[in-house]
Amino acid sequence: MSEKPSVTDRVVAAGFAAGWTVVPLLPKRLTAGAFRYAADRLWRGQGTSVRRLESNLARVTGLPPGSPELRALGRAGMRSYFRYFEEIFRLPSMSRDEIVRRTHVTGAEHIHDTVAAGRGVVLALPHMGNWDQAGAWLVGVGHPFTTVAERLRPESLFRRYVAFREGLGMEVLPLTGGDGHNFAALAMRVRKGGVVCLPAERDLTKSGVEVEFFGSTTKVPAGPPLLAVQTGAALLPATVYFAGDDWGIDIHEEIPVPEEGTRQEKVAAVAQSLSHVFEKGIAEHPEDWHMLQRLWLEDLRR
Image (cartoon, rainbow, N blue to C red; front, top):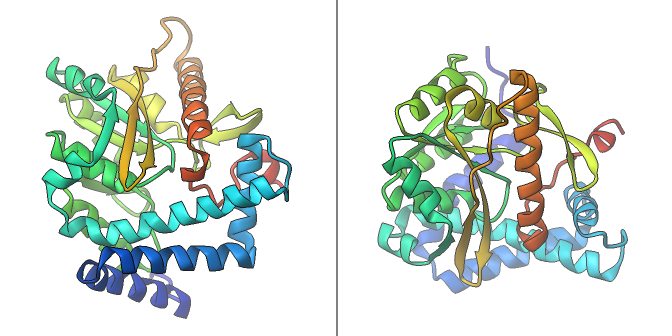
C-alpha cells in the first residue's frame, strides 16, 4: 500500500498543478518577477537548502564560506533555480520553433553525426539550467529520446511531471516503482540507434561509482558509463545553462571507453572522465548548477 501523502505533499502538488494552468496565462514579466522575489525571500531566510547550495558552491569556486561573494553567488543560484520552475510552467505553451530558435548550442554535430551513422547516443547531464527545455530542444531538432525520472511525492505530482515531459516528446521511465527493467530498456533504445538522456552527477540508487569531483570523493550514477561500456553507444556529456533570456547547451566530445580492463574498471574510468567534463561546465556556470542536496561522501556522513 502506498504511503498517504502529507499535507505538505498535497500543497506542493496543488501548487504545481496551478502553475501549469495559470502561469502561461499571465505576462512573462509578472511571473518572472514573482519567482525572482520568491527566490530572494528564500535565500534571505538561509534555510537548509540555501545553506547546502552555498556549501556546494564553495567547493566548486573556492570562495570562503560566508563571504559576500559566495552569498551573492548563492542568491544568483536560487534565482536560477526558481527560473527553471517558472519556465517549465510555460514550456508546454511554447512553440517548438521558438524553443529551437532561442537555444544556442555548441557541439550539436556530435549528436547529429552519431545518430546519422546508426549509433546510439547517451547524453549525460548535471543538474544545471533548464534540463527540460534542453530536452524540448532535442526533440525539436529531430531526436526524441528516453529518460529516467526520480519518483516524486505525492504520486499525483509524479504523474503530472511525467505527463509534462511526455507532452514535450520524451519517453519517461520511473527510477523506482516500475517494472525493474530500466537498464535493459535503455540499452535496447541505444542499440537500435536511439538517444537516451540521463542525469549523471548525483547518485540516487546507492549503487553509484566513486569519483573525484572538485577535489573530493562522491558517487555518480553507474547507468550512463555502463550503457557506453555495455552497448558501444556514444557517451556525450552536455552542460545546460541560461544565456540571458535564452538558453545555452554545450555538447562535448564523446567520452572514450578504455580498450583494456574489466567491465568495472572501464565503468570507473568512464565515470571519472565524465566527471572531469562536468567540473569544467559547472565551473563556467556555477550559478546555474542546482545542487541543493548533500553530494560529497564526507558531507553525507555528517
